Length: 344
Image 1: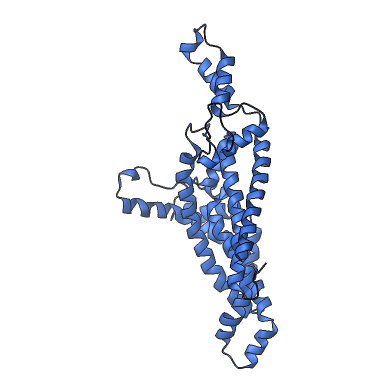
Image 2 (image 1 turned 30 degrees about the vertical axis):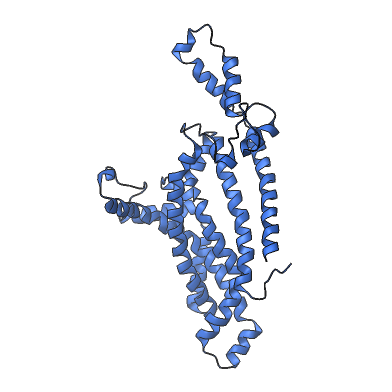
């Protein structure tokens, strides 16, 4: 297992480098030149307009060197990674913790992403736990009661929930709980003037504003996850070993939760780990509909404003999470099922 993990980590590094190069080249083909924008900002400064010694071409060359935009694209890529020096001989890239500077916010990308990342993780952890807490028991129940009226009712509901787009469900929930019943606010994460409140009151106010988005996120995930768990449990319950366990006179709960559930866990592990890794990726649609300060909304705004440093940082983060998730899933298989072992 140790050799396998080492090989997979090396594989992840190779794939990460290839994908990072591709994405870097794609975004560098966009007609965005930060060095020229910096030079033009200086040219518009009243102090420089009447200065005969001011030369925009010289300032452009200065900003290219300062921002690491000089040289060919491969040199710029290596400089962005942090393995190729700037003109002054320093290294200042991803490996050194420099994610770039946001054009819109005029701040380092790492500072811009701190608060949205906290909000995204906070929101998605709650939604994921709620969804798994509902779908796993519901999927097991539907598999055990397969063909009953309650199973058919759940299947109809999950198909409807799975088929409807997220924004349609969000609009319906807003109309029902915000407009008609007036239980929750339509958008936002805090009440105006709440900064003067106590920390405990601010927390509950935040949870109050997040109730509706969490309900929408949980409802949207119920359809696919429930059907996935039901299908895995149905297949496990039809295995010969389950028939043998029942023939031996074991209690139904023991058969379902001790024998069938262990066999159904292998495909479900992929689902569970995938959902928990998804807490970092943000909910693009939900965060934009409800005006939540999360990674999804920041990513969408960065795409609209050609804020490429934020986009590149998030893309690299998503790629790393996906590759690491595949490794975690492979390792988890070995713990869930004794039949799955990697010895070579």
